[in-house]
Image (cartoon, rainbow, N blue to C red):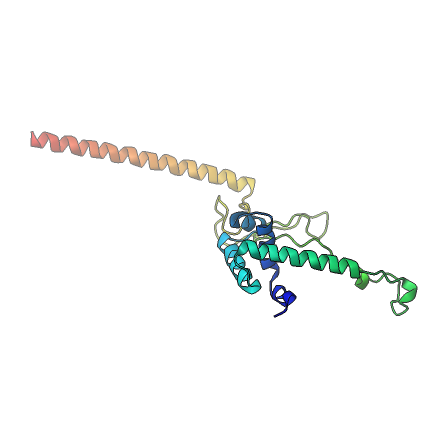
Length: 190
């Protein structure tokens, strides 16, 4: 197997995880950056080590970085600009097909997450998807934040306060009954 074919089998996530290792990040930090679980990062890195044929994740990251640098140098040396006159079949001069793809990759988002700066009508804020069922006052797996409005948060604060007050009252009543029971048993035994 030639040198570049083993790198061609890496997916975008394999490559992102290897870049994280190259930058001396741990699995937890890489997972936070990519918006995925730590165990998923570990499995991507294990797969990448096997695909590349490296000794460990650090060796795989260094091999990937070297390969990436070689390809960047190679593509930079092969890039040539063709004047419009030299390409008469390109109608309209600067075609969109002649421009290089954007180097910015999309940010990972979770299903219920608000996408800031998403394309759409500028007058309207992007709508946030709501999950069905009761909305809880803590974030769910795969989200960066919870999706409660200010009113929902105030209702939850009152509900939690009321729940604590009821629990405290039940505890006091239970202790009072237990104390009375102990006094009754002590009087009968004496």
